[in-house]
Amino acid sequence: MTKTDEIYKQLRNDIFAVRLAPGSPLKLSKLCEDYRITITPLREAMQRLEKECLVELTPNVGFRVAPVSSVELLELTKTKTYLELTLLRESMAFGGLDWEAKIIATHYTLSREEPNLEPENNPEGFTSWSVAHEAFHESLICANKSPWLFRFYRQATEHIRRHGRALRYTNPYVHSGTTVDAMQASPSLRNSSSLELHTDLKDAVIKRQNDKAEMLLIKHNDLTVLAYEELGILG
Image 1 (cartoon, rainbow, N blue to C red):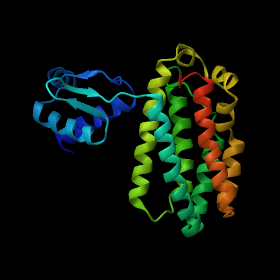
Image 2 (cartoon, rainbow, N blue to C red; image 1 turned 120 degrees about the vertical axis):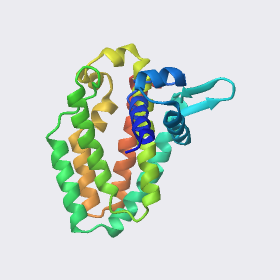
Image 3 (tube, rainbow, N blue to C red; image 1 turned 90 degrees about the vertical axis):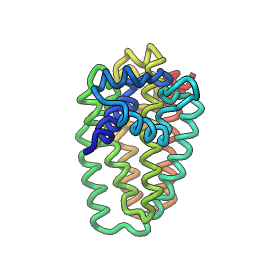
Image 4 (cartoon, one colour; image 1 turned 135 degrees about the vertical axis):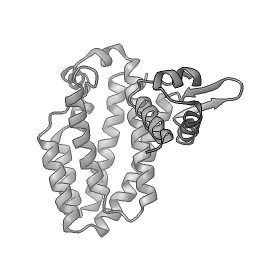
């Protein structure tokens, strides 16, 4: 791995984890000092991050972390849903026994996890549940025949995660509350995180019940947006 690759990966991880806050200035001299890197690989990394819409460059001002907004979060969610539905249709058309087995396996792993929405208070639990949840949803669409669409889907998912976490920090109640608090405050969050919904989705996909599977996937994404609204994250 080159120096450029290393600093690119570090900065990218810090942006998605909101350790580098949206809209914050990125002074190259300070970044060189903080990350112990020289200017040339840092500039190359910043150019790559700019292409991914993670940083912005303003002439005569410099770089900053790309801002987030509720409007952009909704647009990203709409885009993700469109891509996800297309990939799901392809996977149900082309998926075989190995694909079905992967769905069953990731669903089982998810069933062993308790929903955790506390990256600050319980980072290990949050990461464990998030990884299982994402693995299940990716298993549903991994038999697709459109690798570019799949890459765009993953990119949209990453940006949604960053927007959701960043906007969460602006809401004191959500930021300081527990998973139980959030579930009680938001029926939509409780439903979107429930194993029952994911089990219904698993069964519909494996049985090739296309209309039902698409309806459940749309329902899952719509519930997530409603949860943002109920928790005041969308303002």
